[in-house]
Length: 317
Image 1 (cartoon, rainbow, N blue to C red):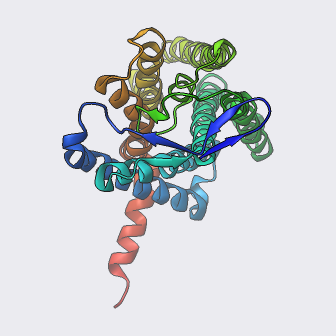
Image 2 (cartoon, rainbow, N blue to C red; image 1 turned 180 degrees about the vertical axis):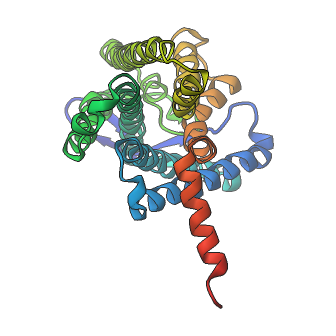
C-alpha cells in the first residue's frame, strides 16, 4: 500500500534488516543487547530516583546528571525494544510514520545528550575555575534555563529530519539495512535528489560534533590549567577525580558517534555489519555505561546508595 499526495510517494511500511550478514546469529547478538538494555533501564532509573529523593544531590552537577539519565532512558526505550523484536521474532516491519517518529526521537535526544554533556562541562569549569561564585552562577533557575535550552536546541536542530525524509519519493527498495530508522539510512532509499537532506544532516553533525566538542575541550583546557596551579598534589588529585566520570562519559558518547558519522559519510554505500554494529554502540553504550561510571566514580552517589541499602538492611521485618 502506498500513501501519496501531489508531491511524493511514501511507503506504508519500511523493513529493518537488523545486522546485515549476521541474521543467522541474531539470537546470540541479542544477548549483549538485552543485557545493555537492562543495565540502561535499571541504572538510569536508580539514578533518577536517587537524585529526586536525596536532597544532598539537589546540586547543579547532579541535576545535569538527572537530565542525562532521562535522555539515556528515552534513547534506550525508543530503540532497544524494536531491536530485540527483530532479533527474537523477526519482526522487521515498521510503519512509515513510526519510522519517522523514531528517527526524530533518536536524533533529537542524541542532540540533547550532547547538549547535556556541554552543560556538565560548564558545571565542572565553574566549580574548579571559579569555585567561590559557583552557587551564585549556577543557581537552580539557571540550571532549569540551561535544561530548557538543551531541549529546545535538540528539537530545533532535528525537527526537519522527518519532514525532509517524508517529502522524498521511495519508489524502489523499502528495506533499511539497520536496526533502527537512522536518517541517512532512510534517505538513501529515495530515488530522487537527496542533496538537501545530506547537506542538512551533515551541517547538524558538524555543529554538534565540532561546536560542542570544541566547547568541552576549551572548558577542560581551562580546568587543566587551573588545576596545575593548585598548591598540593592532593588538591590536584581531588579536582581531577571530580572530572573523571564526565570525561569517560564524553568518550563513550563522542567516540562511537564520530566513527559512525565517518563511516556513514565516507564508508561504502552499502551497510556493512561493522557499520551497523558501530551505529548501535553509539546508541547503546552511553545509556548502559553512564550510570555505572557515575555510580563508581562519584563519591556522593556511592554514599547515598550505601546509606539507603544500609537503612533497608536494618529495617525490622
